[in-house]
Length: 148
Image 1 (cartoon, rainbow, N blue to C red):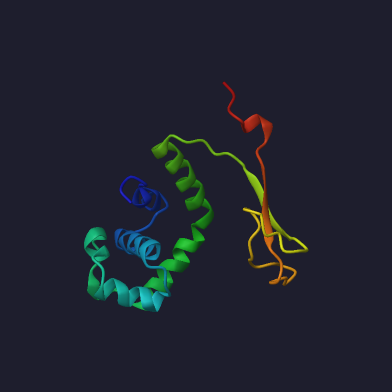
Image 2: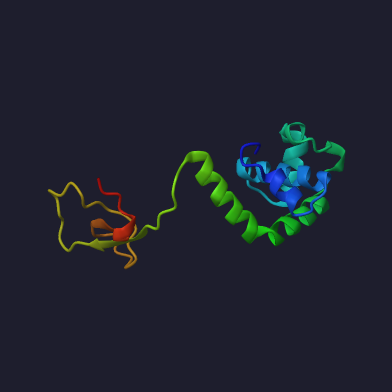
């Protein structure tokens, strides 16, 4: 959280210190233990030291406060996502790339006994009796390919 500088982002957006600490606690908790606000409150109080890391007092934790801070974070969603995208690109020295992909499976009539690729699996056509092969298509725009 320190390297992502979420607290600085929220400060610049006019958030108060207590709300920033609670928001950071919620973000960390949801990343580690995704659950409802009620369950997250219980987990934070009983099984976690996240409050010690962020400075949030245990006694201030309630599901209602987590609901409120969740709504407040959601209001910042678009700007926060954009900020975190830029920040992680800077931290890890990466560039955004667009990759389009699709997966599909097809089934075989017959036993296909010698195939190393065909296996029984879940078919959209509900053909549990037939072996499948999964096909993948990946498209990377030409201008994003790195060429020597």
